[in-house]
Each structure stands twice: as C-alpha cells, then as structure tokens.
Image (cartoon, rainbow, N blue to C red):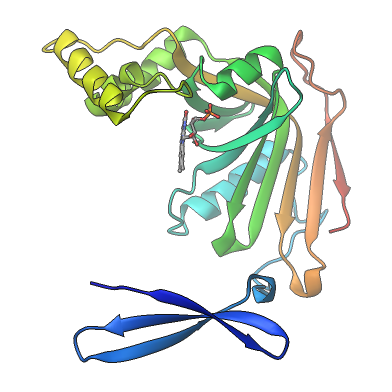
Length: 254
Ligand SMILES: Cc1cc2nc3c(=O)[nH]c(=O)nc-3n(C[C@H](O)[C@H](O)[C@H](O)COP(=O)(O)O)c2cc1C
C-alpha cells in the first residue's frame, strides 16, 4: 500500500513539490523531489530529416516512418489525435486508432453519431497528429474525412472481438448517461439479443478515411532547431471532389 502526500517547498524563489511516501516494508520515508513543470525539457538528438533524404510522396514517407515506429516497441503506436471543428467553430480533439493507411489516406473507426461524427457531418475538414516520442517524431495530417463504404466498415467490424462489437451497440457514444449501470444494462440486453448468432455492425458505427492535403514530418533536433518537412497538395481538398494534384514539398522553420 502506498500513501503519498505532496508538500510544497519554497526554495530559491521557486516552488517545488516533495512527495513523501511511507515505505511500509522497512518503515522509512522516501523523499522524492518532483520537477517543476517548467523545468521539464528534453534535448532531441536521435535523427535528422531533410529535403533530399525524404521521399517526394508523403504517403511513402509516412510508410517509412510508420515501419520504423511500428518496429520500435512503441505502445499504441497507432494512437493519433483527431481534431474536428463543428458548427459552433470550436475545435475538439481526442485520441483514435489508425486502422489502415493507403495512397488515398488514413482510416479510423468510430460512432457516426458521436461528437466527432456530428462535427465531421457539418465540417469534414479534420486534422490528425501522431507523436512518437521514442523516435522524437511528430506527423501532422490535415484533410477531409469521408465515410468508408459499408462493406469496408463491415469487414473491419466483423474482425473485432465479440465484446467490442457488443460495446458498439451498448454505448451511445458522447451522449449523456445517468450512470455506468446504463452501459452495463445495455451490454446485457445486446448480449442476449445477439446470443448465439451474428453480431451485426450498428448502422451508426463505421470508418472514416481522411484524405490528406497537407502532411508534415517533424524530427526533433538539438537546440530546438528541429527539422520540419511539409507537403501540400496542389489543390486544397474539396469535400465535393477527389483531389489528386501533385505534392509540393517545403522546409518550415521550427
Ligand atoms: C488510446 C485511445 C484510443 C482510442 N481509440 C478510439 C477509436 O479508435 N475510436 C473511437 O471512437 N474512440 C477511440 N477512443 C476514445 C476517444 O478518444 C473518445 O473518448 C471517444 O471517441 C468519444 O469522442 P467524442 O465524444 O469527441 O466523439 C480512444 C481513446 C484512447 C485513449
């Protein structure tokens, strides 16, 4: 059992926190100095990225970095921040999981009636961010989110464990609920409903493909002089048409 108390100490005009943890095994007190948030910083030095060393096709460049990230024992390497902007012009961000990427873009799955789903319905422009801290890398993607085909959503849904498939039915994602009991009751009901048979994909659940028109690769470098290589599509993505212009590559100041 660990009980910790946090004490503020004032030294040299700075407040730092000391965590006092009783160590019950040998009845000693451990004093561990916690860093001030403002003092947390890291020097980046692993790699570099430049105009000639990066592919001219950002999806191919993503593939190179993806393979390296996926091979680096990074936990939840496919976790990415998805930002949407809804009707009220307020941005909203959350983590989702990348489930596929191809020449056309980046795919994730969710509830189409969730906060993000409603935002995308009103405004399909979204952004995605990967932060692979172990590689000192960030990838930023901007573009348009479009629903994938029902067949594609079915294929992925059917590959999920039964518990997750029931969960998609049981959770009215982003809606207010009175208590956890609501979810547990829904779970029991849908488990009974689909007992012994197929668990179909709920019509409100499926994938989005984010078709990018901007992709930026960031590699941390010493002295905060990081490398940033940005690719822009000739045409800004348009919700009404597919864009297939060439990519323009630029270096940006960090
Ligand atoms: C690591 C991680 C992965 C997640 N993956 C997904 C996902 O793939 N799809 C999804 O709908 N929610 C996922 N979530 C939950 C979302 O972050 C979010 O809570 C949920 O989608 C509701 O968001 P919304 O109310 O803004 O629509 C994930 C959360 C975490 C922390």
